[in-house]
Image 1 (tube, helix red, strand yellow):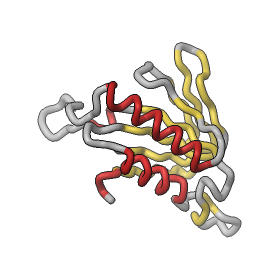
Image 2 (tube, rainbow, N blue to C red):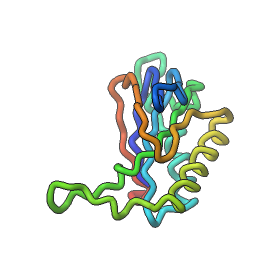
Image 3 (spheres, helix red, strand yellow):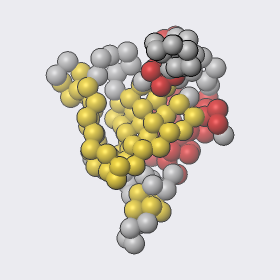
Image 4 (cartoon, helix red, strand yellow):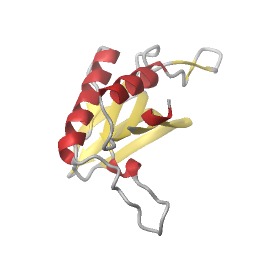
Length: 149
């Protein structure tokens, strides 16, 4: 699994002109699911993301996690994170999991994230054309790949 994590002041997902989810201060997590991903990848990423110290403490040092600040999380599926761009100019998505694999894993990731935080999270809609808005706070943007542990 690959993620792009952005520290945000606020973020939202709109589908067909209707807001599906919105959050205040917290994390926007874009999630790509690969063909060989499983529960171990979910467990590792959720632990890592929720404990990552990327929010400022009272001294202005990035020393607090999203859990420490009581922040919110919005998770959006994004198969294009699995793109391979080694050859030519057209990305290949052959390493992205098919729907029958990626939908259950995306949903399991969202459930695990919600359980870890102890509250509901925002989500996109798998496979939908989504407009994602965000105010990147910092900016702070981090890429995590569960295969690079």
